[in-house]
Amino acid sequence: MNGIHLPEYTLRFHKSSVTDLLVLHSPQNVAPLLVSGDASGTLCLWDLIKRRPISTYCIEKEPPVVALQYVDDGLLAVLDKHHKLRIFNIDGTWKQVYEIPVNTLNFANFLIQRVDIELYRLTCCNTQDSESIDIYEFCLSSLHSLRRIHKGLKFYQTISSFTLPTELHLDKLGIVMKFTEWHGIIYCGMESGFVIGFKLVDDNQVEIVYVSHVHYPNPILDLNPGKDSLLSTSTDDKIGIHELNFQQSGVNLKQQAPILLNSELNSLGTNFKQVPISQIAYIKKMENLLLLSSWSGETIVTNEQNEILNKFSKSKSIVEVNENPQGNFQTNKPSSKSANPNRKVSSLEGLSNLSFSNSTHAISVNVGQRRRIERFLQNSWCIIGYDDGNIAFYRL
Figure 1 (cartoon, rainbow, N blue to C red):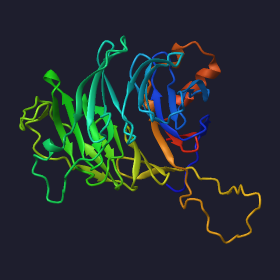
Figure 2: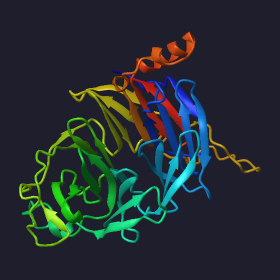
Figure 3: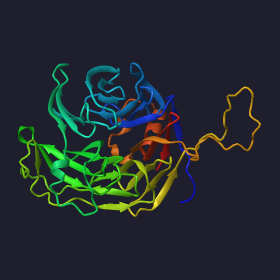
Figure 4: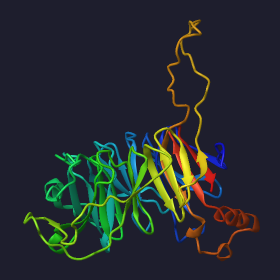
């Protein structure tokens, strides 16, 4: 494979960096939808067949969007830089149905899990300390139902009970970088390179069931739950592979409520594989493909043999704008532009053609539109949001 591939098409609407992308698989739509958020507080719901916005919404005072999560039943959770987690009904409208104050000092995301009908659990950074975790429960039917069941959880003291390798000089885990869920377990990636998996057990005690230091001492940049394992990235050139082989109840080895340590957790995970790229800010696993975007603005697609199948990037404009009305005759002056020729990748999403089982013949559309839908669904896509506001679609 040689050269950089150009996108099949580009969505243009955002005026600032596209900070998160989320593909929605709605039962009401044969084709998927896309939600995008940007650094100016603007949200957009896209029709991927017509390649046009369905609806848009701008958050008051234009705070940068930090992270998106689809909850269920047409509900979208949006975390913004003004320390607010908002839940919107996007079924035809952008009606806000709930709001929670959340710490976004370090740009960490959040995790919402459904516990019961209209009852949800939120895991996020502590409101004042980005090195600790808060866990809430709330009911959408009541704006005053928010209840904090854990405040300022820190795992360092429990983790330090392990016999750590001599090369680990661990005095703290650092700030929380990323949350995700995989097979009912909550995982958090830490600044120290640790990945910690935990769950809530009886009486809402927190049981640690997995610990890995595969990226130590480099920070966790992204976590992506795949079918067979959870993957992590950092500033190094390796992908952490995290697998949980047991789901048994915990034993309080430290007598340190509310945190329990699983009795079978007697070693730290270090499983990884090398990849031909470093400083991996974003990762997506799609069947036998891996999408990796780096701080340099380059995205690569690899197969299970770690071979590079595709490379994607977006070049910056080579024309420098001089706003000085007097001009500048010094042609040998060093350029003030960054040495990196690529646009920064600010979000990454993947869309697999294996995600769709519905038939387009079940919907009432004309022949031309049905063909466009079928043609789109025949392909898998790498979707990249850039810092100039563009969203590029690359065929895989």
